[in-house]
View 1 (cartoon, rainbow, N blue to C red):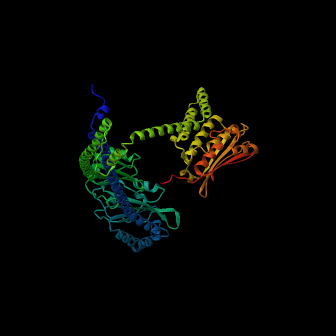
View 2 (cartoon, rainbow, N blue to C red):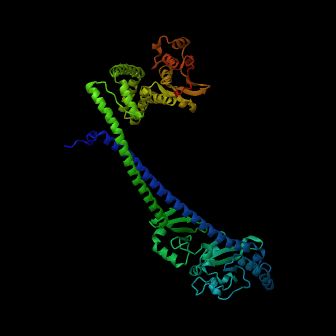
View 3 (cartoon, rainbow, N blue to C red):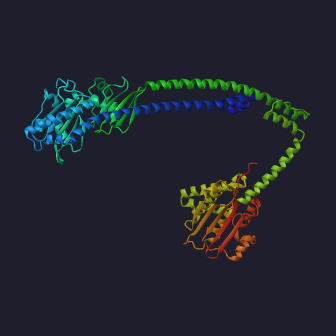
Length: 606
């Protein structure tokens, strides 16, 4: 029958124990550091790549907005021009005025605007009032909703026209533009889509009437001049969608990509997500452009990022292999070195235990093991005496600790608390039972304080709060308590249980009417180099005679409260000196104030 794994480990020699302990307890952190570092590096690469692509997308959106703003500025310049408004509205015009203004103002004005942009464009004015028309060749190509064999922009077939609305009032683009209430907007008619163009529609105000419209301005340009149809690369490009999620392009590569990934792209368009890694090789970034409800989806190739991740994985793999190999060598050397010297000490001790001979351990090193050897040599002759003395001291220490623990714990308080738990259990108040038990655990943990008499002020206050929480469940609404504590004092130290006895006094002696709750205030603040606590209540108060007895510590049975007020005062004076302690002031029928004064104390560094 094979022994348990723990027994197997016990059978190992010290050299093997040290080796396995060193190796595995350093191997695990090394591996964890490597894994965490790798994950962090990969996450950083992914985050950095995504941020770079988002910045590229923002830059593309800014470029599109700048492109649009150039033409919107042209439209705004035309619409605000008084001559354009007069010319469109035919305000006080005859045929001669109309021809004169067109020749001398309108045509030179539009020529200048078109030359400032440097791109082919069509500028059309559609009048709501009938007047003379300026119609270039191949006119139907300019206003058609259906396919025509030539693109008027690319073929430079005219750049400016003026027509009356009755020519195009049945066209879908005119009806959409005429009924739109807000300002300028961009849209594609069927003819624009076929020729990869887009039009800006803007209403021309009537001369002299702010709320009337004289006509409609249409500026048609190549879509490439707006959204930049040229691809960044064959892997990275942008897809622009209108408010109805229709793809705005006539470029075959983008159309083919959209058709191949239509389901993924439409899902992203209709979701609230801003990004999607549709597959391991591409990243989709979606963003609203705040331009006529357009949306841009940028497609970026993730292969460069995957190459960085692959390189990072290789680096961290080599790091882990090298670290493990180095760790194995160092651990073997250290375990062998330590084990030899420890085995030597063990052998000498065994011989001394068996024979009791006057033997010495010879160790030429200057470290802890050498110090252990010297200590063994020095303590060898007095070992029995020291064992006896330590044994006696431990007995006395345990006896003193036991007496201190017995004095700290108030059996009457514990009995009442457990009695309360019993009553709560009878009524099925599980939450209150949990609360009182948790408070009891906190109270006794801080009261016992692992046998240490010194406690932080923060924990002293937590002990009081736990004590109050227990009484809150027991007494109900018979008292109110508030704390006014300067947080600067919480880091200082004090002897424990200097506040709780005064709270217990209030509960036992200050409550005189269960219908009128007693108000208790605990304060703590800095006073020069000291700390002053006050426990204030508005209970029945203490008579002058009884107050004198409490101060002198006479007849204590009448005022039992855990340690007792006199015991708290004595303990503070014993530990901190006679300048510190407790002062009680009270007015019969009005309340009592207990003032506890201690120094600003921290452990000495010596």
